[in-house]
Image (cartoon, rainbow, N blue to C red; front, side):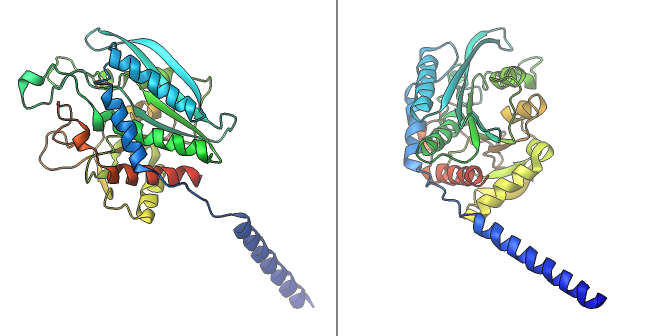
Length: 324
């Protein structure tokens, strides 16, 4: 009798577990992820570039800030403009604004998506020294990440994700010291992000994780697993790269590691304590930077923006968000 009782109990447990597993499968409905529109993202990139170089303290910068804020509001985001005066490495005073758009602001389960929206004031990497004091148009280095996030915001307005999402456009990222500047510090970069990380737009703000989009529009771009991202948020790197592979974008998202890159995500990790990763173009082809021959030159223009790359990045990140 004891053996029969044990067998019946075991059998009941198996049936119970099977029923529970079946119920969980039934409860978990397939996620309907909207289709990322690369034409729309390209339009958002071009609109920024059409303002001119978005260098702090310029008219193009002021006009673009208003456009970004208004566009997020039009898509239903709760928008905060975090304005401050930042001091650059050369003591320039920068009238900066971080633009935050929140979707489902009441949700405690949040994801942070971010990019920088300003332009570098000097084309100091240009092969022609005559261009070194010319501002950069920043089509890829800045506008591409913002363009992808604006298209995502447009999709959020049509179909809200279940979680809360905060989109932040950080200012004054690219006002860092030239390489040959004496005493140049890594902390001279990402000034807007450092300010926000020390002064979040909402007291006690946090998110499950963050994803930075930087230089995500170049033709045939390649994105590698960056060292700071792996150190602070290896699980998020694997989440994003696995999703990209599942969607057929492994030619963009390479399953290889690269060294550490100082970018906005570093300060979100170190200061704000939000595990964050960097999706950033890199290609080791004998270039000094690895960021493209046009990086920090007068040639960072719309000719270097490819809709296929915007689609790959935008689709991947959207699937990550909607599946949370």
